[in-house]
Image (cartoon, rainbow, N blue to C red; front, side, top):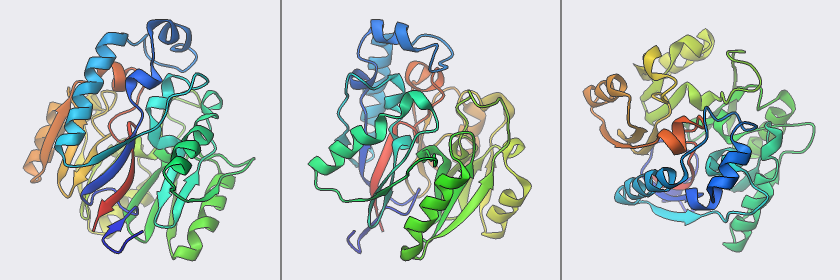
Length: 294
């Protein structure tokens, strides 16, 4: 990675980002009807509305100045492939391919690998059985510190393997013990309750954050934007930073939006009922940032 760019950030100006378009992941009404229950969507996505929502989200990303790259949809992938953050982690030395904790998603890392290799993006390593690791459980606190959630999707073996791959880069891994909450079938990751928005600002849902980790954030000087309970299920805590205090969030979270504005943020919103709320994946889930400008 050039000295002008890094992959080790959640908030620096977004330069290049991978996405999986809704038309590639959702495809058609027949696919949606066949898969939504087994994937634990709250209801079947309305396909044309999903496509329209995604066009709005896509425009929001391009308006931020980021260059968009596209994963290729494959017939074997499910609706969940739209949440492309989860299948890989990007480092300054290359891609780490995940091993999905959700069994129905286990084909996604290999599919993404084909896209990376077609663009000559190096593969640093991959998580092997019995390890599981999903990108939604991973968040950079700074360029040398990575928080990793121990969840139903990310297990100790996966965390140990990830730590070993990052150790030569001098990266410290902080393990965050996530709660049971709604159980193994729920889509619950670290980034369900944490979204860094600047070097010293993060949106959090404190009722589900371990006390020790919340204290770590405060000790690091973070100002915490407290997402209210009424906006948790509408993905008020899943916020994508496109630059320091510039962010994207799903519509329908007015309290959190106002708190972000009060903290000096520029906030863009998109309609996301079909592509985000029903599947439990907000804007961070819909994107796999490749690099950010230092």
